[in-house]
Image (cartoon, rainbow, N blue to C red):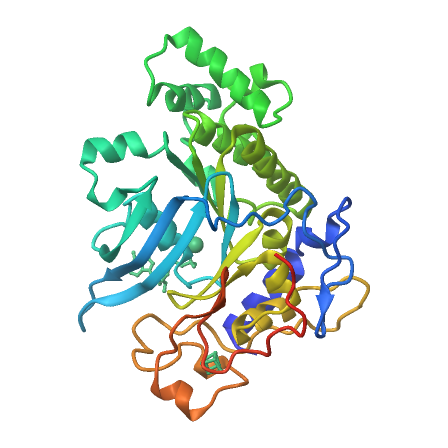
Length: 381
Ligand SMILES: Nc1ncnc2c1ncn2[C@@H]1O[C@H](COP(=O)(O)OP(=O)(O)O)[C@@H](O)[C@H]1O
Ligand code: SF4
Ligand SMILES: [Mg+2]
């Protein structure tokens, strides 16, 4: 087994999906040999279709590139997606597929020498990529906020949690020190910290991983953003805490009326916390569906591979079926399907052309020359 395969398998062995631990879910997802038996979509997450509504976030043909000795290398290629107000949407794909750079591009935060080489990021109809530095500063945090995978590196180790949360409160609003502190305490309570007063005076290293992530979420909520971008927010946490943090994110999404863009490598996380999903591979969106449709009837061979990598309830698997090989490095697949080296349906045509994104029905899209069979009965959204 290659190192990449081993890492992928190990990841699912040691970070089993919180999906399979969901106690309250009822909707079975099982068909076409991809039986997740008791796996479910969280009951509060009936799919929300943005069609007919105006999108809060509309990303059009986004392209991100980095310079290299051989010329610019495109790492995000023509990504287009939407998130409606209040909607929980996931962006899923293996490590290296371009998820974090896509998220950073939404806030115009691509680290130099990388750059956004094309596309538009519309937020409530305004193009974020055309914002002045002052507009961007007002936008980040206040309208769209982000939480990261590693709260320990995102938090300042020598500042108390209280000081960091109050700074987040004062960043966009003139409030007295006392009022900011009172708000910080309320925010810590909102993210279900027990004894928020005590947490205010704690330093990050004195908190557990789950509590640090809650503190980060509290900071992100400080200015009441309309969109919360969460980049692998639970990957570093153990399974029980993962589930708690995902549920917290969705409770907050509902109570605050926020949209949630959840970025993850784990379809278990998607099933628990999102209603609609975009699958990303090698910098491109390769499938779009409701979470339910994706689990019932994946159309892209890569999505099917991801689903097969999930542990299944009720079956003792000797070995999880990892997708062979690793994500193709950026810039190595200009004139072919990027998934061709790993695809069991590959044909000569796949090596000679880049598949376009086909839209067989509203809300469903697939980038493949030979997609998997459509479901016999269309699954209701
Ligand atoms: N600062 C950088 N310079 C050059 N390449 C980068 C940089 N950051 C990321 N990349 C490349 O861009 C691709 C996508 O990265 P990233 O968005 O972090 O993936 P993901 O979040 O899906 O794991 C990877 O192949 C990575 O090597
Ligand atoms: S285009 Fe061909 S190689 Fe690419 S995913 Fe589809 S079948 Fe596989
Ligand atoms: Mg990432």
